[in-house]
Image (cartoon, one colour):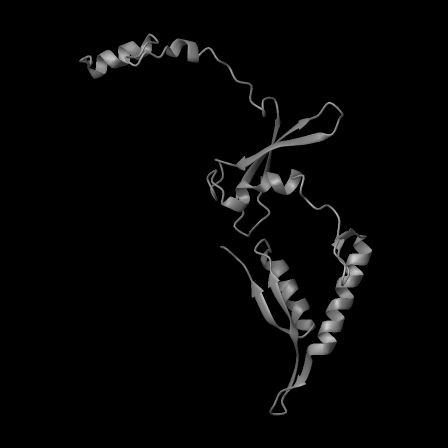
Length: 190
């Protein structure tokens, strides 16, 4: 029932578009697809998530209304850092830019409230500063149990972002130490 087909014969059949399975490959090659990124401008950039510095290719195209539309983000195969590969966070970089669920302004939920409300950046920064001050004042320790001067804040912790450069990490550490924080962490993945 099965045909006795040599490798050479199989390849010859495939070259003319007919396979022993009955598929006509010649018809399949006539189908042309238009790529979504066809005619797009390619820009090279760096992943924003960590300090590794993986290279990305961002494809953009001018929309009919004149604004630039981001179409695709992918790893740059020419990069010696990531050779086109991306971690799950880097692979989702497009969602960082164009997700419909992205929150574009500060949101605040007052104590006892059930809904979040949009607020201004000035309100958000003032609220953050007042909360830090209140927590620092409430949990600041000037001396330990043995009477040693320690001047530390035990009620606030700081976790630095993995995307910090060395300089940003240094600056953040100095700022937090200036507030008296002792619980500091940096999340470098290098």
